[in-house]
Length: 256
Image (cartoon, rainbow, N blue to C red; front, side, top):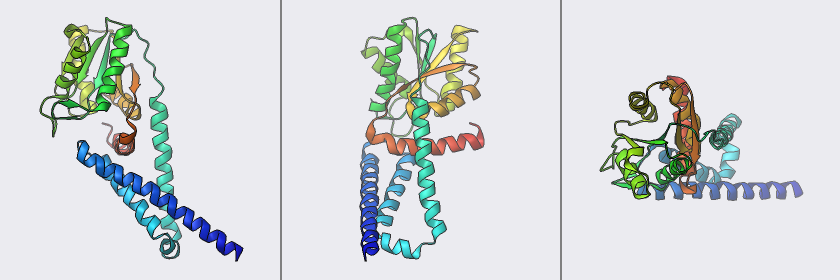
């Protein structure tokens, strides 16, 4: 009898945990569908949230009907995903900028119309912090024009920097890139032409993005490139890290 009661308590606790996590993920994804540009990370977050809700709602039946291997794959996959996300975040928090770089590349991310997202503002603020320590620093703002964007990301970023006192001559616009790889390819071309051989460069992006961006910088031809991170808004963290996980897998498979 006691063992039966303990089992019922565990099932009830499991339901509460699964439903709570699932509802939070689902609501967060739905809200972001209407407040940010669509990306695969949002869809991934929504599906993950709904899977938690369904599993929690039908936990009793799931324990009886689902084969053990399927439950192991499901929770094993979630565990591996969580560990990998923690790796991405911890890697990205380890800044290695020296403060003596010749240029810093601000990697673009989505804007809405002509408005910068808070995440992109955070990247630019991090670049401004570096500039204030070294006013010889060139800031390369890199990003083309994508869906739901009325101007290039680079132009929107340039406007933000100018409004905060960064002089025009310290800003370089790169307006062709549509991916992180292209951010580095096109930025390197501009810097090679402007600075010649022997310059040093850094880049700034969100902490979850640093690992992949560092790899792509090397593939794009930067022998050494340092990095500094900007913080991710809490409400974008789940879809952003899920999207990044898929992008890292793509990088490992296709090498770009």
